[in-house]
Image (cartoon, rainbow, N blue to C red; front, side):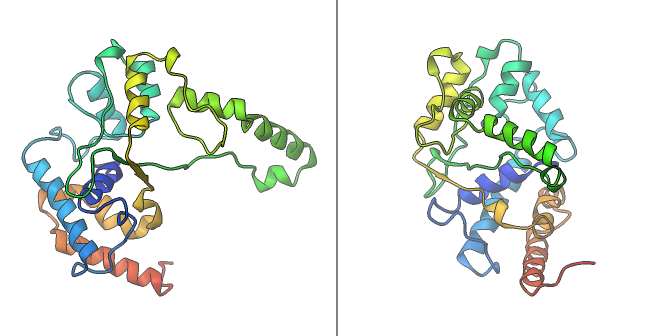
Length: 242
């Protein structure tokens, strides 16, 4: 929660919105979207106060939290679909684990999920400007983006691809954990992109980096959101720190 609060932010706000409105960013607390975001954070505060998070959730790293989960010290862990591969590598008794949806609320069904394409292959300018390195880099990327190779990555990580005819995953080779994850993806009712990706790191800092203070009441929601709106306004006017 402290180091990587974005998953909780996404679903807490999504639970106050809908697949059609999740990508909206509020300009004030008076707006409907602003009120929805506030309500989402209030849900997180409520969960924290009721003890749903680990005692050290305000200062532990994501890797540490994940290890607590693998060691049976945490009942659940929220992360991306790629984490299934890590569970397969590190967990004892892998079939003791399963995958499910983040509970929904209001207009958002639990089966309305968040996802998107956020990775790819790139060539640096330095490599591109060197004829020998350019040739090797292009050949490597050409190979790694072949349909068969991309499909293999998707099969291992349970990811989706942009291929029209790509094979997404091969259920016959899966253990039960992988089958559960694949079934979850297949039964989704909608998928929306992460709204955080449309907000700069600087602007979301009062909400993301400030999450521990918000949860404990050291900073009020009103103060955190006022700072968020202030930074957004500055950014819209081209004002950035030196």
